[in-house]
Length: 511
Image (cartoon, rainbow, N blue to C red; front, side, top):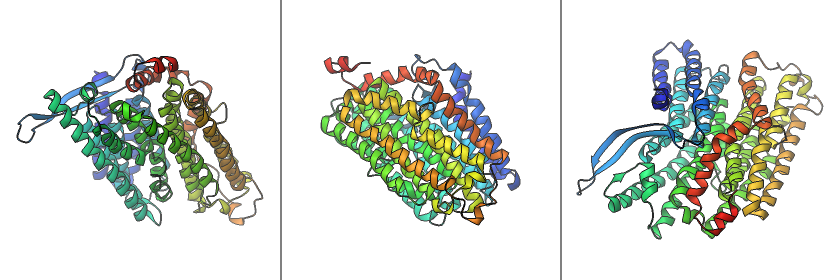
């Protein structure tokens, strides 16, 4: 029973809890939000030990949803409620259910107005995010993709900083533009496959089995999917909405935006864009273009982060660099690089989420995100300084932390197919060390020369409760990543087999 209904419960429970919060007394809102998100996490945890790595798509629930006649032919569009997870989406679901309760708890003192609406929107956002990762029907996927957009727009636009409306509208327009093109591509795909098979279905596996023979149209369909996902990643040069959204969003909004929403773009490439159009994705001009853009993102994101006076914007640009490693790993298309890309997706959510929490915590004390406003605060807030240092080192990729394992696998895997690109990407690690260590020096070391920093309070028990689970994950994945790698390996192999055409090249590059 758990296996059949767990994903439906994960989708429905946050929406039901959001409705309950809206009618509850305002003083209960944050406590109800935290309790609901903890229950969501508890529902998801058994996925870890009940998931069978070699079992393919699991926890599948499939039922008819919408049947409408198609134009003059009378043939029905078959839209189904179909959900499931494999070794790729499993970890995105678990990452979502981990970060949401921490985000709620981290908002306790930051959000003081319209609390019911805020926590209800966070829970609706949870449903949308999980829906994106588990949907096996493209119509359901698109609905969840759009459901996710609306709560984040309001979270940024209502509870954000001074320029929140500008950031929220920019985020909305960029994402909506890409998603509308993707919708057109989805409809065209369903129509073309339906004409060939007589079944006008949005089912993922039906489309996978019957795609082919699209000719030049395949390039334009791939381009529509590519643009939607590249904006969400965000790849250079589609990244310009990200720094504004991150800086203006409340702390929880930044954590979820970096930790989960950006992964929807890379997940879209893994699940849809590349498996649907492998010939286009691997065509030399396209593959070379993606690898070059990934390298530009790695180096550009790091160099721009280095000159940022705002600590939060520095972390935002570091996301552009980290996601560049993911894209490089996906297009390198070796087992090591794909597993590395998946690990970087997980690790970025943990480490960058923790960095945004830390910046939010110090902002609540000093009401400034400027690096120059601090200096020497390790003497005053040693616990904060210790955790900030540790999380920063994990973001750099220090051996023994989670960041090292993912980036190492990406570079080793990419070296087999793109050795020059792997060498250039390795310099991105050096750039990351430069901008984060320099920022650390200016924030927590150097002289304590500002009187307003002399009476800062160290981390509270509530703030430690937010940070320590992330610190534990950093250590665990850094020291013993095997359980995660074992669960994702069959799905990574299947992805490679679905994309790479059989032949001597594929045999030579097989791990």
